[in-house]
Image (cartoon, rainbow, N blue to C red; front, side):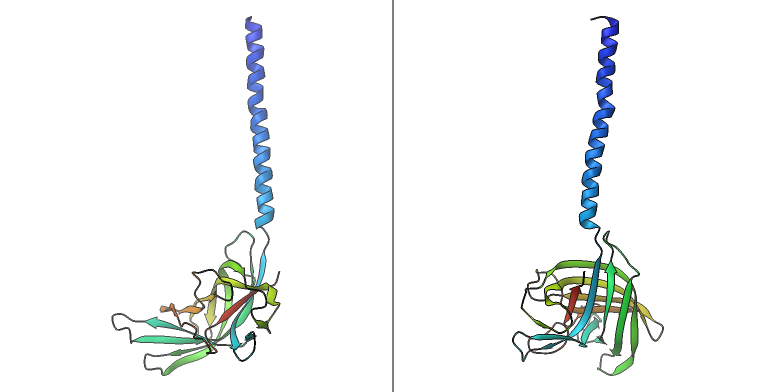
Length: 219
């Protein structure tokens, strides 16, 4: 093979490298863009602390309920502080995940000392979504839903930043383990209020109308 032929062959082979790289990059970009379309849809979500009426079949869920959480102080488990919360609101969770300022809503709060004596009360409002994790939609027909479309009722959890009317701030954690939920979701609420950590959600009790929540993915 002549020097000219060898050089032509080398140029031809070398020319395939950028062309192959371009084709590979194009394919990867197409795949990435396709995945972006799948995952980039924002979710508009409503959350509620709910009433649950057990006298109907199936049970009826309505807005306006209450839920409790505890701040337990070791080493004496009997010593704890308590907070009662009501509330509802909406948020938009970005398709990319993460935080969002597209929020509405709030509710009322009341705190109690370890003797059960009220120590404060007021209102709170949501200032930001910190995180939203959708688990699944609830079992169709499992509830009479007076809040929204039961087919859009969802299980999952949300963490919201909140401001209290007395000037303190904190977070509100909402967990919904409704009909058809996978294991691992706490039902109820947790909260912080400045340094106090009400991180122990009061568990719901069958037949007792408190400590329950619901989400509706509106679109």
